Length: 379
Image (cartoon, rainbow, N blue to C red; front, side, top):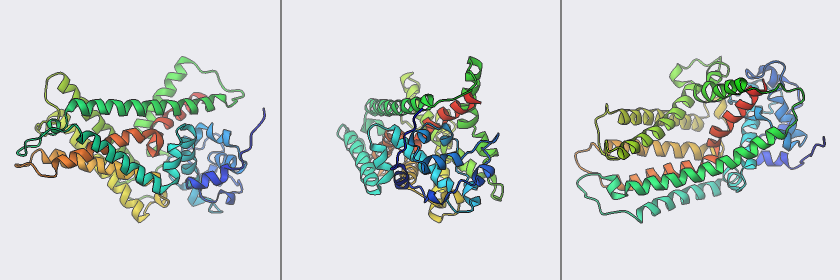
């Protein structure tokens, strides 16, 4: 089988934030120290070697690329300071851009100016589009879904989800096509039972429960309490976002059933309200800690921040904070003047987050489970 060598992959990876991987001389220390490298596997060393040799197809078809949790033990142990952890993160950004047919992921990851202008313009256009259908609202109370009809917001959300889903499926198809095309000599035959086990492992054990992140990839030298450790911060951010998404969908479902009107104030112990409150608090806590640590560079895993990191975290934080403030505003004795403009910002940022999922850091929510499924299925 012929192998295609791409001499441009090395400078391309540097555009995505990779350090000078030419310093790596394939000693194998990173593979020896990595808690996810087992049974003699040359992970993550093999990924760096692919890049050095210009083996683009092999790099992009390796599901191992997505199994890294960025604990940075390999970087701390590297005798030549090649920084394999940063390389792995850059390679994942490069993979997202390579799977994307629109070229948007490439521009968002490699140009800070473009990323900033594009995100601000997208949020502004979404807010302006919603404002174009606004209705006069009574200034005595906050009635968000009288100001912007709930059906309009719902339909706009459905369109955003459809666009995001289509782009994600195209990227996933490209990834799976590459993984399946790669020869697997002597690979065990997959069975229905093995496939089910791999699916439960990838989605439940890894993606949702993050078992290996908590156990294998924990910083053994970290003396922080559990609520400030890396795994919990990531856990709170992920489940905070999922919880808010679930609360939004449940709230709209209750409106369809005639139980309550969307956006109306309910007691704090109301199930949907309680879920949204707890999820919002978790999201704000997680993103705030992540932003502060990146600003201070207090974590070995946050020493190098990219445009993709900041764009994603900032949008998550803004969506969480504005949503939380809007919930509190519903209980104020008088309607604040900033209520409706903040509502437009909140919904526009949330919509933009959904639309940009397949093109940025958040894309790993799709690619990682599929990659872990492939690895588990392979055994």
